[in-house]
Image 1 (cartoon, helix red, strand yellow):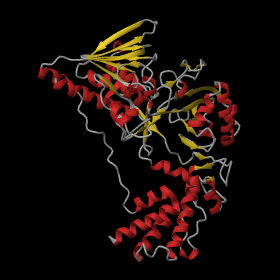
Image 2 (image 1 turned 30 degrees about the horizontal axis):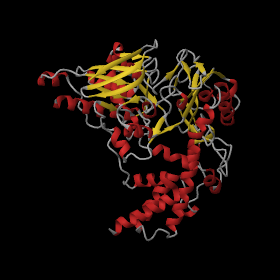
Image 3 (image 1 turned 60 degrees about the vertical axis):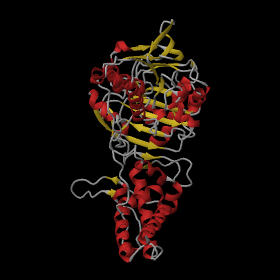
Length: 533
């Protein structure tokens, strides 16, 4: 117990000195960092044989919403022969899984219309854009034959850009350079403290020796004779690359002071890499994320999806449920089924007339919508590759852009499309209040500060999306004040013959994995109910 207490004390010291990212690194170096199992939750898909063995007839299921949760519900139930039909308000499958290309149109809730004019082969994933290795989404890509390629989530050559920091403000800093300086100075401080006896209560002599050896390697710091000083290394990068003959290269310098590195706040960016869902490798479908919903729609059968169908009323009945909707021609229609699965955003469902009870309406209104915005910028040249050697990855900023994403496809091609901002909350609202031309102007004015005037002069086409102003969707995702309260519990249960599904009914909100697993939960519940008679 004494050793364990000492170890905890040491880790607390590391956390105070270096923050969450340093703490996790130290835990990993000591063999203490947990490694979660990267596997999908066990799931048994319904089978045709289930009905044949029991003699029960297949049931009809009506799905509201052709996003990932709705498509997955119909796809999985369809494997067992359920008669599934999808009613989708938009003219395409996928919901927030939406890839914008040349010819794509969007009319937002303010009545403003854009038409995409990206060149052939260029696109922006307006919604989800990356797939972690552990997510069940990859299983569906394999099953449906959706080819994948690597999505570069972290890139040592991308930048960190802070305008509001107390030091180094307005200076784009390469990710590798920032990491080398933060790790170097933190290692120097901790090595000095260890050597001077500050951690003697927590560490044995052997522990101290091992820790200092680790810090010298981790931070590229000098030895005891030189005061464990961090003076920079080739980890920061080169101003002149090493080459042939006598060209040994020139290491990037000068190294900023410890005070400036701490005051810049760049070290706070590194914890992003340790996020379970953000760690490399990550993937994306070849040609656009919407390859997933289109593959699902094909597997379900296009004749089973009605586009332009806007739900108006949902009724739970003693022996089933029914939905009244307006079709693409403006006609009012009603369909009955044994079950209805509402796989649409909760705030949208809350406005649809129903007889499921006031408590259901209140629960649907309980989660809060998150404003989210993106802009795609197509350039006539891939200057970020040719001039700045950035091949994929993300540059975080403290401006209202939030982040800039470099494309993980089309490397060394003639053209390329960046995500010029991917922002949330107040910043997303501020951009969405502007017409597209003003959003573009504002975004480019920020990007020029990082990349120079080519960010403006090489620009060709653009398209912006404000998810909270997009009809039938109205948010990038939702947040729950609590997922342990009665509201979340209520919507994870059927309201008679009506079920709810979506990433918002999972603990993996804003990821397609959440939508898939929620759909699987609903499919299992319906099938078990049918089999039980």
